[in-house]
Length: 267
Ligand SMILES: Nc1ncnc2c1ncn2[C@@H]1O[C@H](COP(=O)(O)OP(=O)(O)OP(=O)(O)O)[C@@H](O)[C@H]1O
Image: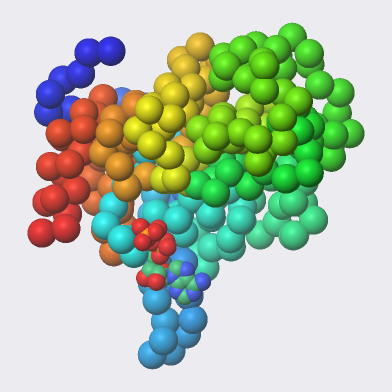
């Protein structure tokens, strides 16, 4: 892949790019945040984790969320994925406004339309790799598409590991199982929270390469929180948070451009 060494900077939000109507942008976005705020606690103890975040995450694109520690990355991802509630504003996932949904509908939406990859893998220890991968479909009472399952397993190099339990797999293999589990139901969005945080650079590169190819070759949408400029450089676009606001973004990021931008935010 070739990179512009500086990356390309865009200052407008993706939800409303120049020349596109908001309606057209909304159609292209897999998930959209509109003026989202999140306050933890109240009174003197109130923490404003998000302050009016508006952005869209394009369908079929790989977007990374970066920013200094405490800038609101995890909070934003949790709100986008319906894992946490917002204090103000709206989140729209596909055609559904998730803000204001009750717990039961949110649980179903997460099960049916969202895939997750966490830093800690979160596999069930008593199940084999194959059983872990198929668990979300099983819980949803859906029949696996065997051709799709085979394609995902082969893309992740897991064919000869399907009968192994997590304790019999390396960290990289476990995270690849978690990636397969996230994509097997063809969710509208995969949310990845520091997916390479527990991996060495080679295993991390395999996971990131898969996430990128899931976007390029399988049409997936991926939103990833990361601290790592190299991980972020696999994305099509990086949005940067500071103090709960999106302050800048880079399209076609390089590790050097991401690092420079992070340094300027932390200065
Ligand atoms: N459950 C909570 N209760 C109170 N404050 C919280 C809670 N969760 C997060 N915060 C605060 O909200 C702010 C944003 O936190 P968040 O975890 O989203 O940041 P982050 O950018 O993901 O940080 P890091 O890179 O360190 O993981 C921080 O000031 C944090 O202390």
